[in-house]
Amino acid sequence: SQTIHQWPATLVQPVGSPLSLECTVEGTSNPNLYWYRQAAGRGLQLLFYSVGIGQISSEVPQNLSASRPQDRQFILSSKKLLLSDSGFYLCAWSAHRGGSYNEQFFGPGTRLTVL
Amino acid sequence: GENVEQHPSTLSVQEGDSAVIKCTYSDSASNYFPWYKQELGKGPQLIIDIRSNVGEKKDQRIAVTLNKTAKHFSLHITETQPEDSAVYFCAASGTGGFKTIFGAGTRLFVKA
Image (cartoon, rainbow over all chains, first blue to last red):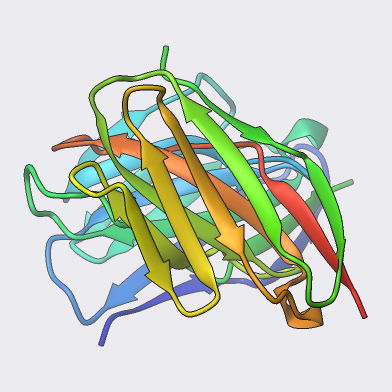
């Protein structure tokens, strides 16, 4: 069966510090991968998605970037964190099935607090 | 752009009562409508989904209905239990699309 991991689970960082959040998927190959941010009490905002190694699409202009160095690894980064980057970051995957339905499965999330 | 509206934002019911959450979508090309349940501090979990060629789907105490003409879909939970308390998200996506548009969420409280 497929599993998705995220780490760290929680992170407290000062403003201006760098960020690296990691997501890995097991039990599947060539997945579509996604990064979402969820502000407190709010919905899910899609930040980035990737359909393959080195292929990243950005949904909103921001202080963050994403990379996919391996097939099942997705990394969210920032060079200098802002207070507004605080939130709950979720990684998700879906099967790369072309025209089929886009069922997404989420990881456990990383709660980031920027002070 | 594509949009999914979800109502209500908060719903409080007595244990054993039914709960209904409603969503509307704007993109007529949408053909897949999942529902997610998110418990506090956890990632959303897919609980049920419906595809555009089906009008209704049921799984034990939960059911979803879809009206493609009106671009409405709904989640129905019967015989609610305290463990149903969570935030529920509806979503919509299209064939071959990589983007799933989520509603803003409904916080459901089930009072014992």
